[in-house]
Length: 106
Image (cartoon, rainbow, N blue to C red):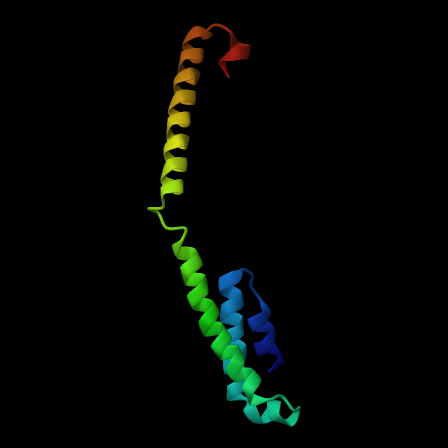
């Protein structure tokens, strides 16, 4: 049992936390007599399962806000692309201008 709990404990991040909560609830329900022997209420396991379900929906919504078609992301990506094109152009011009100067050619 301890190995199973330690296996659930591994990992990090929000998605892992939600999964861990769900796994612990399922583990508790599968071993309910053992947990009842130490006075753990079944309601807590049910609440953990319910919270895991609610949190997974909330996490999905939060991840959905970072979709590929969000306007701030599109603007950021365009700005990066234009900046990259400009710096590449300047770098190429510099290579042409300073082709004899080894120190500046880098």
